[in-house]
Image (tube, rainbow, N blue to C red):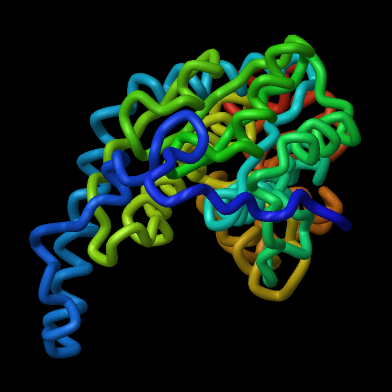
Length: 314
């Protein structure tokens, strides 16, 4: 894969829509100016103190995150996809969230997708210049066939990554829903999104290293987007992963415990129901709670959008 060569700006020039030096995530943190003179424990304490501010910063933008979740839920209800787009750490976090959805929620790999500037190979080895390649973003979204039913979530700690900006512009052109997640107020990506999530994480403990607080904030937001959207679309019963895929010994044991806990039975009965349900925990739960066999449980779930409470009641 070829990418646009890195553009080397003149000294003092402001790259992109805003100079990096003006961004809060790029400014020096007065609380950690002596980081290199600290003991190991002091370095860790300084980083930990900064990390403690992240949850509060995310809490302040929960109404925006809720709007983003509702956008994803609406898309899922019409067969649309959640598509994360990002470069570097931001892109890797989106890809990580996407690949965790199938085993956790029983989704198809196509339902939640992560696009990383430079391709999946850039997860382990950085692809130089990929984040500056706007044409690459358009090509990646076109290859995926993104359209009006989908939601594109652009992740950019700086809020000005060209790959993400181009992706959000393309989402707008094709009528897809769009969400931006940035860690600087007034970010350019925010102006291009239907819902803008701006988590103001402030200066990093290590100046400009946005894999730290900004990365943590983005991970928290991604966790919320996918988890809340799956809860709202019937992938969870109570607080249990009833659509978990038991693909290894650990997950088989977890599925058995989920069914036992959800139905209030011992693990022996849960195991028998799971076997009759071909390993599908949600079906097994409905069988036990509604007192029916596997085909009837599947019919109940299908009639109620996969929601266990409604399937049992109905």
